Image (cartoon, rainbow, N blue to C red; front, side, top):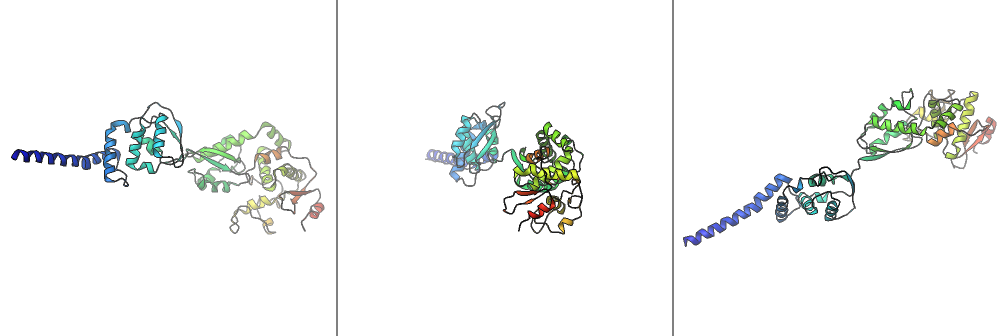
Length: 367
């Protein structure tokens, strides 16, 4: 009788030890090695996946190939997690799809893996790779500069660009143009070549400005430089005039004709009389929430600023916007015309009527 009691006690002890092992030690050990389990897992699931992780040994922390190179990997929207795991194994990025699956389900990372494009490496462990798949944010961002924007408008686009550069930092740094431009100026205004730039998300403001400056210089050909010289303009003067043409000529096919009017005026010593130069001088219009106030009042046209080309002859002291390649080419290779005046047509098309004399110009006024 005593022997049967002893056997029963041993059996009960063994069962209790097994219960403690499965409900206590194994989950605790897994939690210590791989972090706490997902809250959504039931007790039985926690025990099951804890057991699986421990049975995988070091497979979670070793890499498929320590010397492996990077490769692209895409996850479709709504793709099942085991499909992702299987493709990772097929791509030789991980040692086992099952080990990856068990880990992400245990930790709950399976619910937060994002669809998108990734750059992965077989040198990464399963744990590192699973964490990498939590953020599909690309390493590069596309930074866009539109033709005719002024410095402040470019800066205002930074907070939504994905770059970690503040508008204030950008504007301050633009006061020291990169040496590659070869200009002596207190502003880079006019030399922000309008384009789409693929920029590393981690780029500094100096790196961004250097990238933009180099793009500008690459687009200014020797023929264009010769064209500027033929008009009696150096590079800085040409960019300044092109910045005015950019704001005046709404239709691209009028840029060369608009440029001819301003060049004709410069040759005879007339003021340019350009509204955009006054708009630039006035700065931000709070009421309309724009940098380009329109229409201008008679008092606006009298605004005392060296940028006001109704008052001061010649070119303004610096560019007023950032011209497109078309506007720059229009200044280098303008049309030959007899015109000294132009004004917007009355049909709202964005085109202009041109005149030789002031009397003709008045006759072209809208009713």
